[in-house]
Image (cartoon, rainbow, N blue to C red; front, side, top):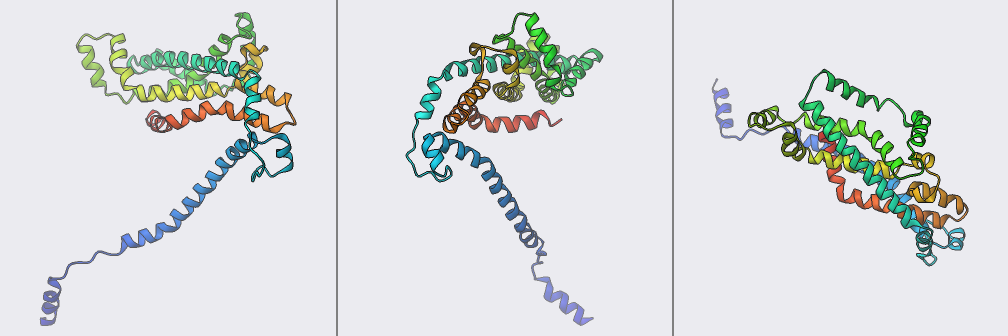
Length: 299
């Protein structure tokens, strides 16, 4: 008994030690961190290697490209390929892409804001049916509708025009745009809308003063997403246009490649110039895209 009392007394002043669980956790997580780092570096190489190859080859002459290793160029770099691309009418195709992408984005976002507001605020059987119709767009591939779309564009007199590209691109952007905005607006507390209704605010005022300001992160995200999608669209310009005056950059790159099939450096210069605006847009808005997309799909 005295031994037990003495042992308790001797241990009474000791500070209890915590198990080394944290140390084991940190040690155990080290292999996982190493694997994650290695995978991230490999992915960086996979993404950066084509960009590096494109930029280096675009600044090589044809003879230097054929006689040296493009990965480790030792010849003189030149900007002559970029000058040749600019002299081939690149500015006109760039302007067409800006007009088509900007017009399709603006139209899709405006229509989607009104549609999402009606679906969320005026929830009912009819608006729910409209929402389901929008979602059907995800199940219908664009290629399956190209023949009816081609006939309709010709019937409306919009063939080989920028408007004939803007309208279809905006229409096919509606499903994803409406889905993101609907999910975002559903996170708005109903009490805010009810408070404005009690103050006598109508649907237009609620949309202008509450729904649009709160949804600006999602609106910016879908605008960027729709713009990038329209910018990279190749199928619509290929089928719905035939003259250089209505061609966009993806089609121009395709035709430039056909004219210089064996001359790789100018082709790489053309590709580099065509993706430069999108690259700059992504650098500026990458955080906006990730955060607002997560918020839009969160519900």
